[in-house]
Image (cartoon, rainbow, N blue to C red; front, side, top):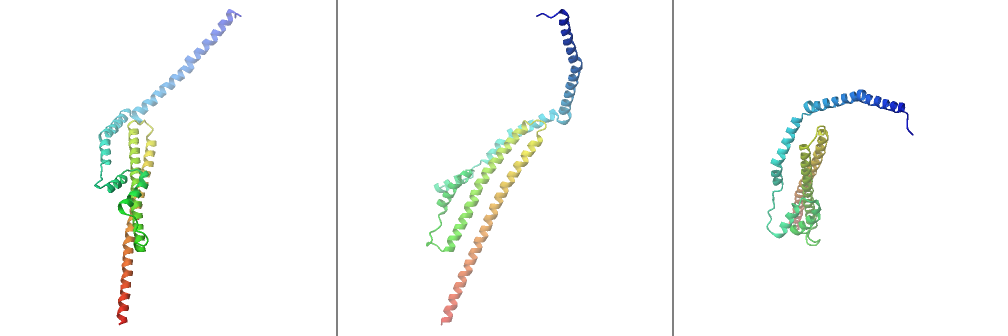
Length: 235
């Protein structure tokens, strides 16, 4: 069904009004918004986050990574093993594995190299207790070093990731990187506290061991004095 010519003219008039409104009113508003957006972007790039300074900082970080990371990794991976016989070599290999999963193997190798606790009738009870305690403290601290080494590797990996992020960071991401750095720092502090606690336990164990020897010597001396006194009074 065909519309009259006047109807066609009315429809075209409506479209003309719409296009005119878009081009004049909305179009000018959009133009103002675009101009404002460009001004804000220019403010960010020239005043708040200067693009030249950002590129300079990124270049500095990238240059630091290329200059020092490989050397630092080589320093961290310098071999320090020195054992020459099979048993101690195996023990050193486990001790420097930097894997907490090697803790059971470390205990087995420790016993194989340092010897097991004598049987009940092969040594004095006090000697067996001291041997057991000394071995326990020694193994505990050696196992703690495995955990600490693995934790140090995790910290270094996190540091490398953060360094890579800084090299490609975008304006406004600094608070997130700072928060991530603070979390990593707290994790590092926790590892340090764990190592310090292990060192204190080892020192306390050494003091207790020396004190136990002193107590035993005192007891033996008292027994000898009693024997001498008894022998003298018997005559």
